[in-house]
Length: 367
Image (cartoon, rainbow, N blue to C red; front, side, top):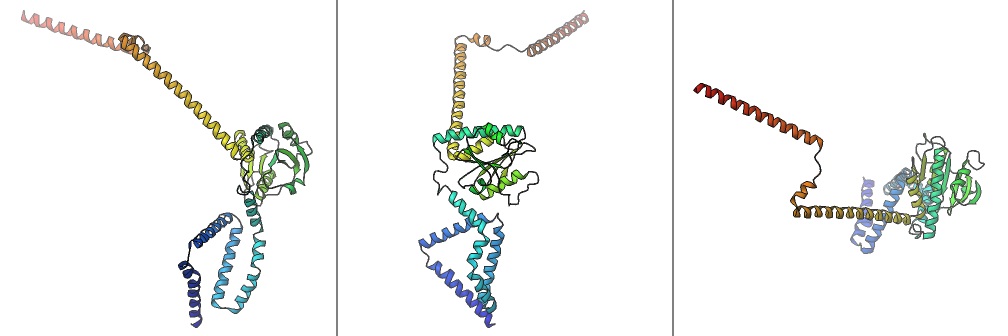
């Protein structure tokens, strides 16, 4: 009983010291501190909820809760074990969550906050990007028609030096002919990935890591698995052409988009390379097309209004001109009108005949 009373006193003192008293003495800076901490915890939750580390984090919280419960109950043996665990908890967390820490730091380093020019390119680079994207899309379209397998990697801010070392450095200009020659099935460098760096073909026949996620790869080959695997550990964009079906796929951020047509592939590559510059360019083109359509519609409306006004003025000057300018009657309508008129005339003639017959009978009775 005494142990239970001591437990409740410990809980009440903990609540008074760490909950009630801080709330009573809270200031503006404390509110900002709490909001920032809540934001960080929410971002951590969103980052870990779709990963295997999320379950590990729940297990870690369970261990922390048990350690707090043991400390409050003042259990000597378990408290000693908890103290031993607490001494090495920092190193355990670093080892357990090493992949997640690396990915989070890479995302922070690749963010637009630390790379202000990430989504903006100069006009000269934009024109160069349009040229290489045109060549790439042309090559991918032809390889898709001939069912030539291809694996093209566009390097982002994360450098792929460890994968470039597994292949052969080329450093060539990007052309459709060059890409198709590299992935020709009898070419020496066709087996592996081609890596594009700084808008040039930098290396070919590179080995990529395999995917570690839970994506279903039963309907695709090793190229798609390698493409997803690379995008899981970097910010690269990978274009895949299936050797069996010729279907074009795009992998990014650990996701795979299949059956991509040429126009969509062009938009994806331009947006990836030039960022907001291409989006602004496309928005300007859409706006100019919209204004052109509006201008054509306005001219057509003005022309129709002038024609109607001219016809109205002519009808006011000469009322018969409206009938002269009226569209000719359709043959079906004229036939229906003539047949209707013939029927009316026949009914009138029958009526007149019957009237004349009745008048003759009345005259004969009177005589």
